[in-house]
Image (cartoon, rainbow, N blue to C red):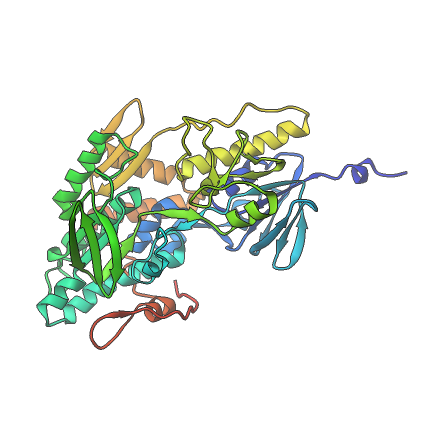
Length: 452
């Protein structure tokens, strides 16, 4: 007698990427009659919205990271594979992981995005972005090394260059970085140095559009700019960066071209799809946009491949309001949950209406007691927005111990104004931004393991 289970093996769902989209899809399939395989090149989920606090010494990487196996340990139908997907074979329904084939019935790709320098990839050496733990540690190294170098510098011109921080991009990441660095300079580090006054640091936030935080309501953008200015940040809108090299940032404002001497330049201006976007378009014939994001159908599948879904920052979903959804965590979360629900409906011979993103609001932290929150039906600013921002980010952290540690750390920082993770660490950081005898950064291509 043949076991019926052998004739009808469980539906195999493979999820590529353990970010918000992939993880929320996996968690939503916990009780489904399917086998789930989550593949990621990292063994942890990273809570990216708080990555800037790692870069500025407020939190440690482990505070905002959760091991994937631990998060999914109670999902008995789910296994985690550590590896990087090299290729996809839609005809054979396989993904290739380090040369090994993994079969799927349904594939969910959620590999996110990386920095975009708009065709000027050589700028990355001088202006690092913020997407990974390594990025945050390298950025932390640059920020705190700048103050250390200024402390030893006798030339006032060079000292000012070390104390000049340029952040390119006035979106939430740029705004939060600028505010955090300003608080470092004017509050946290003010009594720590003897030869320099850290409050004299120049923090410039450059934005190409006519206001910072473009997705927010204009009055909140203005509130954010006012709060940043009060912290000492120089906000410059309608400003385009035309070159970054040799500790000089060249900008264009209208017809005027200016040069800014700055040894610390941080990039928060743009993103592009991960390499999996190109793999998907080549293997499935899917279309992509200029940023490399895969254009998806109303149910988040790829045209002609109803069993392949793309969610999160890698997806261009333009079936709502005729414009792509923003690359933010709530979008990825809702897309991951939708696809998980759709898979279960399909297995029952049912279907779902097209995906519909419910925008529950946008948030940006500026500094202590200063934030902006746009919930659509209400707009908050100042202390209440700041408190709401704290609550939301604690709530969405994945594991309870992360919630507890971050909350305690924030309470301690609030009363002491001390950022306890101000460590200059990482062999890669030191080698990749080595300082020569003239006090200039010398980028080095060698990549070595980080010490976190």
